[in-house]
Each structure stands twice: as C-alpha cells, then as structure tokens.
Length: 359
Ligand code: TXA
Ligand code: MG
Image 1 (spheres, rainbow, N blue to C red):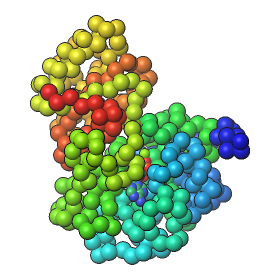
Image 2: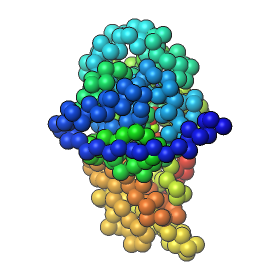
Image 3: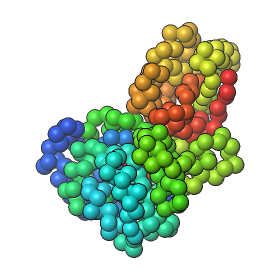
Image 4: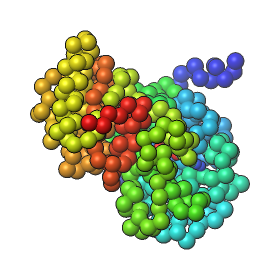
C-alpha cells in the first residue's frame, strides 16, 4: 500500500541549465545539496545521462529503482572523483587495476572490485563485487566532488528504454519522478561505459562500451570478453545482471541487418516494400554512406561508417526519433563488430530483442 503511494506521488522536477565546459559552481552546489538531502539528480556524463543518488544512503538509492522501474537484482555503478575515494569502497586495488585507472580514468571504463563493508547491499544487489568508475565530464566530476560522496548512478532512462543522451530524453522518461535534471547538453560518446570484471583471473568485459577491447588489450593483453557478447546464442546467460534484460527497446518492432553493406541495403529495400504492402510505416536506420540508396520509408542517417564513433553518438537519439515518428518497424543497418562497433552491435542486438538477420 505505502509503496504504491510512493510510486504514484508526482514531484516537481527542477531543470537547471549548466555550461558543460565550464560548469557554474553555484548551480552544481544546488545539485549536490539535493544529493546530500537524499534526493535524485540526473546529470550528464561523457557516455549517457546518469540518475544519481548518495551511494551511502540506502533510502535514496531505493528511489532510483522506483523512479526507473528497475529490477532489484540489477546492481548500480558508483561514480567517484578520485582514486582515494575508491580505497574505502573495495577490499584492495590490484596493480593491474591501478594501471587501467591511470590509463583510462577519468573515462568510460567501469571496473568491478571485491566490495568493502562500507558499500550498501542495495548497490551491489547482494553480489560481492562493486562497480566503480570516474566519469570524464566536468559537470559529473564537480557534482561528485561537491557532494563529497560516491554517487550511485544508472543511466537516467525508464528501465528498458534507450539510454538518454540529452536532458530532453531524461525529461521524457522521468519528469515528475526525480528532484532535478542538470542539463549539460548532448553527451559525447553516446553509449555507456565498458564494464570490466577484475575480480576474476583474466579481466573480462561484461558489457562492451566506450573503451574498446582493442584499447584495453594494448594495456593488458589478457583481457577477454564474456561469451554472451561474442556469441549470438540466446542460451548463454550473461555474467552481468543488466545484460540479461531487454534494453534500449523502441516501441516499434526492430530488425538489424548484418553482412556486406550492399547486401544490407538490398535486403532492407526489399523488406521495406514488403512491410509497406502490409500497411506498415517503416523507419530505416541508414548511414551517411547508404542513405541515398533507399527510396521508401522514413530514412534517418545515424552516422558515418567511416567514423563509427558518430554512430555511437547518435544511436539512442535516433531510436527515440523513430518512436516519435510512430513507425511500426525499424529496419537498421548493422556495423562491423570491432572497436566501438562492438558496443553499437551489442546495443542494437538488445534493442531488437536479438532480431538479427545475416544477409
Ligand atoms: O556509462 C555508464 O556506465 C552510465 C553512466 C551514467 O555512468 N551508467 C550506466 O549504468 O550505464 P547502468 O546501471 O545503466 O548499467 C550498469 C551496468 C548494468 O548492466 C549492471 O548490471 C552492471 O553495470 N553492473 C553493476 N554492478 C555490477 C556488478 N557488481 N557485477 C556485475 N555487473 C554489474
Ligand atoms: Mg542502463
């Protein structure tokens, strides 16, 4: 009964616009106050917007799960602004973790450590590891510093929906459910951080993201990927709880086409005609190099195949755009699963519910 009322209660969401390059310190203080009072603040990072709460305050962290409709068994990342802050949250920091921190922090690399007793159970969903990262964004760093605590923050979307890369996306999902949104413009990378498990023998990527396997291997050649990332087999259960769920999903049905680019274009064109015959509105997620080769449907270029970072940057926004245009089906081009393409394909796989066609 009581819980139900908590969920239904609307609150006034304050939106504050902050300069992303040179954040106004007094405005960030307002956000830090909300965090310290046990409230929820959405803020930009270099990957996607996060929904932050004081990581030491269980009641505040509970509100994250309620606002997002997030399953309780999905643990959260703690965001820090210094390496010293990590020391008290973990049992120990291995030399190989220190090397990775030095190279990739602040940045889109989340590492799993054996947790210390200071970390509340709700953060780790009862696991013995805790996920930690130092974001590379002036607003995020300033907010963590000012609040003086590690900030627990999942992506600031309703559970299951595409992650937010603009404050407007956060508004769409969470307006009336959280205390504050810090609008710092569009996030740079556009896909979430790489989740790397360092508590196992060979460091293992559980979620591909902003730091690529190739980059990690240059520093540590032993890094491997969880089998569920490499294989298309739905029977392989991912090691990371969050990877089990349907995620990033548009309202529309979605199919991803992979293979040679010309084959992809041909297959999408053919499929488009078939869908139009059935009376469906078709959205085509094309690229700069291919967008002129489609004649029918609502065609949006997600970025350039020559610079896949542009595709990552626009990916979630483009999926949301197709929903705004109320298409019935999204036909998306796939990209090669290397470098940032691994993260892009991982998100497309999840967004489509595994609906991948090799052509
Ligand atoms: O880029 C990002 O990582 C963004 C920004 C806001 O920092 N955050 C983000 O958080 O993507 P979230 O909660 O949407 O995704 C965190 C992922 C989930 O898949 C979760 O299951 C996994 O990290 N994770 C967290 N703690 C874990 C743990 N102890 N063991 C395994 N996986 C863990
Ligand atoms: Mg998320």
